[in-house]
Image (cartoon, rainbow, N blue to C red):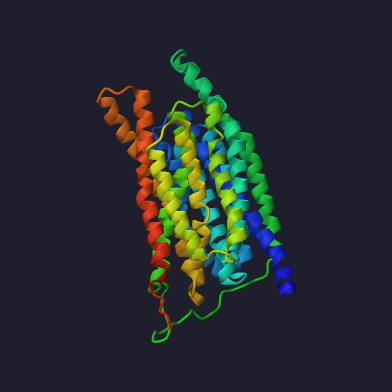
Length: 436
């Protein structure tokens, strides 16, 4: 047993590094959203298309990624994914510098396509590299790497990209249009150095992973068949998987709202950009602490199902608290959603892939498609904010108060998300399985 564990250390460490990479790239969206909103002068709904461009790629590219992995294997697929991410970073540089928002979205989509391939390979790999009962523990370790790198990315890019927004807000009414354009162009050029470094690093990692000592592993060729049932002929005959995809879709939307709206939310409440630009790190910090608890507790003290139930209940409680509090207290409850969200992903993956056998790669691709919830639900939150804000202003409410009230009240969108997660934890993951 100890020899087997020793042989798993290097592959797990390499996969952990990959989780750190796409955590870093994913969670800089929290800084990119207010940055692009400022330099391209966008509405809230338009700004959240930054998240949409990244997450919609998971829906569009997941099944093609499964096809690529069948042809190339896990390791080569991971290398190709990193290369695509590097290309996306290269495209992003001139797009953001020229403030061409449509091209910015193209660069983000290309990066998202690379992350789709990377995640379609890395998640099932870490799930099946060891016992299914401890998969949530391994994925929690991956989550620590992912969110630690995400917190670092949010911190660094928040400092690099958002430093001029306070100055812009303070002077926008006192400078000419020409001066404003010059100021925005100068802000836009701040992406050049960090994204150049990112592109070079991703390209280097793509080469390194190609020669990394990752063993080829596969799930069992046979799916679990309960007594009285016949073997499945299609991945769509696993209802617990399909419900898992839906639950993951909703969960990722909720997770992205918690991480990507918190900076803009703090600003809408009147908090300074100098303080608010670090708020995404609060959410990710809460997730990291909870991941550490998951590593210790799962499966020795609590099951994956229990962790999922507790997460959903906490999500409902914190969402109600956000809506019913104000100011920095409300921001802290948004950050606390990191506690509720951390163990959802690690728990859903093994529960949804359980018993799929030869359908594991395709099932993984379907779960990756669920990540597209991050493309749909956060912009819906932004749309709710815009609509509520316009309504309050029409009623004679001051713009600042209308903005903060609309931003706070629109978090009700999280409530049905956590209700669905709670259902999957109690019943959804059991559908299709019968006790012998």
